Length: 171
Image 1 (cartoon, rainbow, N blue to C red):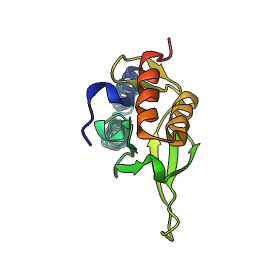
Image 2: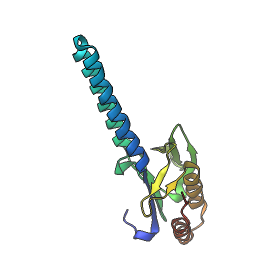
Image 3: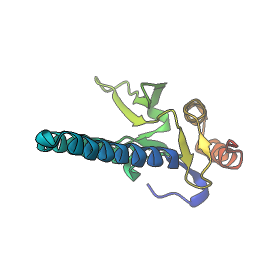
Image 4: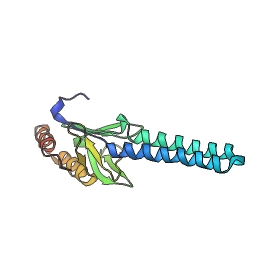
């Protein structure tokens, strides 16, 4: 789904989330070393525990901050997701809501018996616009998605995207 540079909004994980991920991972490593030195008899057990916790935490954080977890808004569709990226045309987009540190939306088609939903991580630190690195809150992202969904034509969606890109929130 290639679009001209000015006709899309890409919401990526913020730098704060990556810094937080690295800080907490370093904390796990330091705690692991302290536990090994404090209790040398159980060194293997503590090394395995803190090593496993660090790996699980880093992998989980990398999934949330990967390129695949970006939300892309174009004049034709919205795409997002974490492990299974889904693209849904605006005409088929149904309800949009927030979950526990996520933004979720569903595809509404009358011919399908099962609705397709998409869940993308969107923590309290928010996300950044790729084109200008400004923070976008979860509520503002939902307002943008709903405005694009409710726009009657692709031309109006392009105009909205240009407006949102110009008037990005100030930090």
